[in-house]
Length: 149
Image (spheres, rainbow, N blue to C red):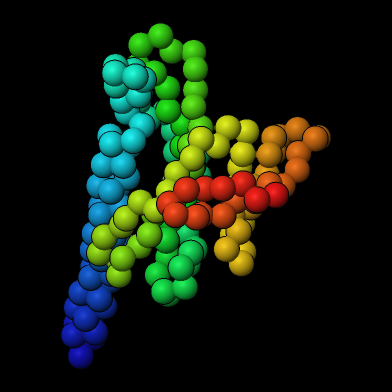
């Protein structure tokens, strides 16, 4: 009887791990497509090529009350040539039944660090590492982050 339970447990755990891996791969495919379409080529002619430096934050919460965990990502990017400049971005992805993700909006978030989401407000700490830090709030309106406080 014990081999049956052990086999059942292994199959169950494997299925959970596989579903999480599929969820992650769908998310990172969407993130990469977003980055290529919106960040990697900038400038008037699209001749400034940017690369991803670092994902500085990933936050999961139910943005649209559909019982799915949506993902807000904070990251930095910099020009491939020339260097020196680092640009900060925040982007929100909607989780569609754990099978796909859709970008809802993004903005340049220099000196901001995400702190919470409450009653349709995204709250960020401005200059989080200084003694002069304070909270600012944004709302997502028509796929655009608008500062409200």
